[in-house]
Length: 142
Image (tube, rainbow, N blue to C red; front, side, top):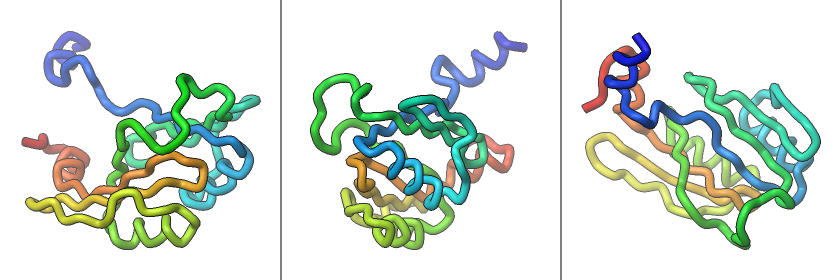
């Protein structure tokens, strides 16, 4: 079964954990707990972890002193979280003090995106993605 599963899904099996960094870890924990409507399920000094969404992906908040490299501003890949209403999610993030990074954009074929920089300097993307919903319903995205 495991071999069949690997052949079906390939090497990258799915989102496991995304790490966000914060100089003020306690403020980040409070901000994300309010945004997500849940408290972290795991914590240890310098780290909090939330389980998020339909597949219980992990969002890790890490004290900035452990950040690899020397990035000083928003940079790198944008992780998009599927949401049912991009405008509402974008407006909520902005109302909580996040700053626009990429504006609301209809990308065609049902895809809609926007992204913000949270108060701690991390990029948070939100997306309406019809393929996500198809996979969630038991189908396969094309």
